[in-house]
Length: 291
Image 1 (cartoon, rainbow, N blue to C red):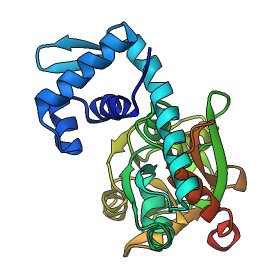
Image 2: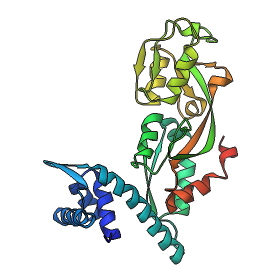
Image 3: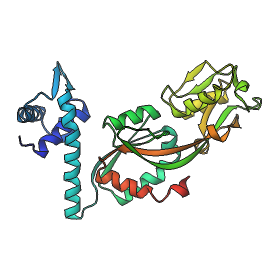
Image 4: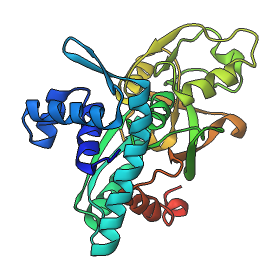
């Protein structure tokens, strides 16, 4: 069985883009050509790589196995090309980040990275801690800035930013020093999967009457605005509050055990591309300054 890198690139594009049509557009090929190359690859490996359901393609277990090897082979090919030619990293780097990290930390980092490696196209998506961690594990993202270092598994991490979390409420709210002080309040937070929400729920859980009402929102601007309007309380990084106007808010300190959290970068073990390795090397220096 001989595998051609061109076929693996097409195969990976079909998986990443979720179908032949989108993959063909990304690769600047006609749809029939991409379909033919996928059939040739299946014939070459002697097994079905996709389940075909009308207009949809669903990857098979054999396809998942091949995808892991394709990622490694394509990465090694790119690294070899760069090493021999002396060229800077190129291609696409798919990153994920918490919205708070994207808003308060990443602008200078990504600007410096783009200046150093202009041939790398950076695609950034935001999401909750759990969504981003799963996306990295499932190879939908190359790496992500999250709020909790995953334990075990096949993910590596690098500690980066020290965040201080504070409870915010509407101005004039009585001082919050213990869980009982918010027993009648709603929690304004991101949907389940948010590490900061879990941190606040852990603290509240020490009280006898934990918060049961949750107003779920998908952005810090909406969360801050609703809290200022008296909808409830929220837990946010201080770094985020520094990036927006927030009149009508009061801040309340948490015990350090609940207030201190470190943002790590996570990626898959032994699957770091040249573009990701360059980002990791860039990030080794500024942690103390950015913390």
